Length: 79
Image (cartoon, rainbow, N blue to C red; front, side, top):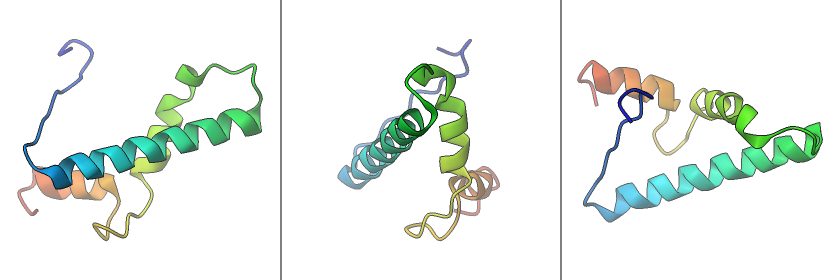
């Protein structure tokens, strides 16, 4: 997993799991909408990066920032 740049994270809090579930549902919804709009000849795995980038650059009202901005603040120790 490290070679693929995949980080395994876990949380013992139920709120974190709820946020993760909401994010996964949002990504699945965006992915299915793009597949419907752009045609069934496309493979879903070729669209994952585009959907992920769109999700991470969209303002999320629950954190009043984009996930990209929140990750930068977290890395800088501001969250």
